[in-house]
Image (tube, rainbow, N blue to C red; front, side, top):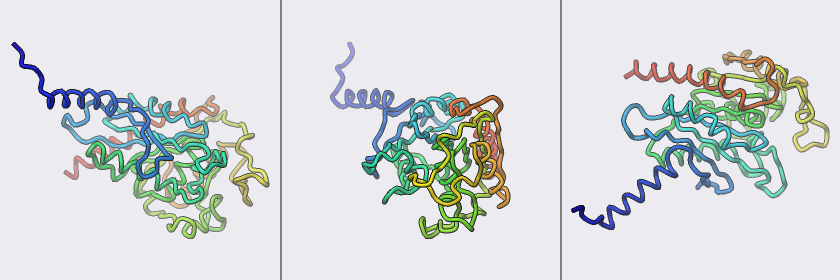
Length: 294
């Protein structure tokens, strides 16, 4: 005859069920403890803690449409096969009550530093799961591409790879123009100038569709929220602007893999398989180098 379960064992069983439902696999949306105005969801491999090497972290940044769960889900298979945790942040529209859709793209909005918010999320996830993410991979498309390349300018030492997808506007490594068009006053605004040597250590992919030629959303006009002199000088279309960013990076000695995808318009989910190939290549070299060092 089976002995009745104790209250302690029942609690343990309930905790195990809750962990399997809510902490592993695709998770619910979680408020960021450092600033609950922002939130995130995760994909966590169900093999976590079952031995082997600890997982790496991939951050998938949404665009203007805030489709963050879609990007999380698009990386699920990659995460399972490559032993990675996926973090998909949500930076809502209008966190200051002004309906601003673009604040996160330019890294500063009022007192908010979006690079710091992401780093707080990364630390929170690492603590929650007993892991360490000194560096992570970052992918962003469209508005997320804005965020990804500017995060790289501000925090290159935090990244083991960066994939920059089809940003509508770019910040060039240009010391003759102010932020956000260039980097002349970056140290005054953010307390840090571009660390070119650190950027050179980060594998960079730039990806955009060859048919991504609509300009209605990306042409800055005087009087607009993000208008400044030379706002459109990097080119008229997304491929042209991303090519200008590539040229800017490569002139500074930052190597770039440039993927101009044939017959693709503005479609971030369609770009994901090429991003995953890029991350998988970098990850294999990263893990191979760690194994040799050991």
